[in-house]
Length: 579
Image (cartoon, rainbow, N blue to C red; front, side, top):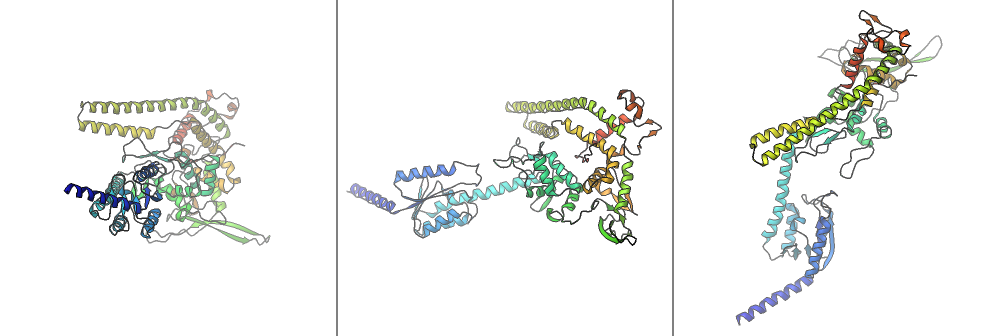
């Protein structure tokens, strides 16, 4: 009798449960943890397929399928989830199908909403792949599962924050490297560093060089980069490989990362990456950009504005135009004057009150150019010598590159061998860690040093420098505003802050490579012999015999070439083609 009554009770519960499920209508909810298209691509589709199959097997009616690609770590950021909850409260459905409870919530606010609707009976069933939650169940079970999901987010956030702060403390900027640099991919997660992009680093540096001339605006540099150089952004997970945008050029020119600094949470840090330019050059670019990386709007450009400082107070030299009527002719003539902005220094006012005309500045620049001018015959001889020696140097440069590659491969083999020895317990752990770290440091340094030699670019730069020395003084008086600035910029590029005007006299600290030509007049004969071959003998085309009679010329050519090619930063030399 007892057995019969127990069986009857079981059938009653079973039929009541079946009737309850027939009155339920479910919303199927599938969520993807990240909005990144490349992550968990099949996640939503798999969830929908598996839960739809479960609904068919159990005979559960699905009123609507909701899918969403949003994170659940914050409340009220999932519009699809919020819409589903509102419809549940309106009674359009009374059950939820989802893969796991953590698909519904990973934060306490959304978790509390789901738990309350279930406890109050508005939601009559929440079915996951492996269990069902009902209003009559112990609410602790669902709360614990959603709490665990929330705790996972909390711990993940703390771990990520700690990892980023550790990386910052080591001097490495978190996140994607800006244009001109690359994130290393060979290190373990959290140990990646930032290195030069061999393809884009010199091009971005050239953008800064053009900006430093003061003759180019960011839009003009952008046009040159995209149209003339064929610049394309770095390809990154399906994006990039496109021309640089207008906002992109301003981001580059105003980013202190290129000067060796980066900001994290409002604090400025010195980075361990290789700077592209000096802080002095970066500050100069910011002056040219004006505030917030926006170019200054000038109705009329002043040729030498922003290039000189006052020799007394270090204030900038400003320019102004004035008009004067000539009494004898009645014509109005315009003059440009350059004067100090009279910055206070140590409480004392600057005493430089006079103004220097633009014509006066240009006369002095012509005189300064004369200190570095070589004759066309010397230029002709140099170009032929360069053409001959560049073949040998290209071979030597390639040999050095191959040697570095062999060294790099040898270091990697040492690391692999060290790992094999450790796996066989043939070396102690402390020794293994110390040796491996040392070898990896050498590998990183060598990877940053290695770059494919570009003999053609080197030849162009050296040739351009000697053409400048031969032609700049002649071309300068007839040049336009932009080319005049470029010529002056070529002279002074080493120390921009050392170019001063005091008592109406220019003081220009010339580039190191140019100083090798200082006081070499044309033609010049000094105690040590002529600096260049005689004109009559140069016309014969036989250059080899002149080396013994010109003991200084070969040394000067070699010194200039070394300064140009071994400079820490890319040097700007205006291109003056022979006409």
